[in-house]
Amino acid sequence: MYTLYKIPSILILLSVGSVWGQVPTNLDLLQGMVPRPVLEAVDSLSPTPVPIVIESQSSSEINNWLVQQIRKELLAKNFSVLDKSDTSGVDLTIVIEDLQLFIMYRGIDRDLLLRVSKYERSIETFLTFYIKNNRESILYTYSKRNEQKDVLSRSQLKEVESTFFPFSQGQKIESGIMNKLIEPAIITAATVGAIYLFFSLRSGS
Image (tube, rainbow, N blue to C red; front, side):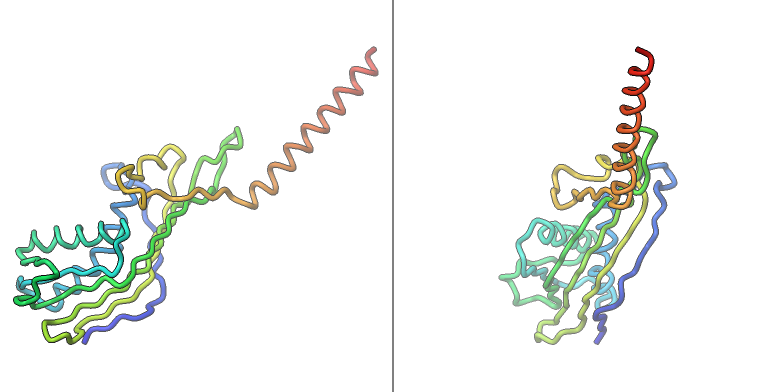
């Protein structure tokens, strides 16, 4: 039996652009983080195509997306992907137990107008699944947290999200330290400037 359980998170630092100068979208990154481990597990158990069923214990949007991605890749490899109600000729069953996703953009740099110009993109997933045979014996279990990070410019944020898949959209988090340092400095400078201008006008009158 192959078993992976509670493996520490893997941090993969990605380059901002690919060889073509394009930024990988959130779905591109998820494609490698989520469906790929399932497909690799199937390949390790069955080098040749066999009848297979995919089950998900959740009907969330991202779980449905994952099932469709796995199904598409298995069909491309000539696997027979059957409906879960048809278990008579099934050799393997993939059971997706849990899939959690967190996407965040943390402000890390500002331009001359003090607007956030760069964000650190963080995509974190937690995937749990197992594969069983037609005798209900569990052949493979997997439970793993995975995280990927890279840096995006402000203009690239909209490019990496899909309007068709809301789960691919992340949350912006401005830098707390930057806000605490810059905002009081701006207020102080404005106050000092106003006081200086006030007394300059009075002394000149």
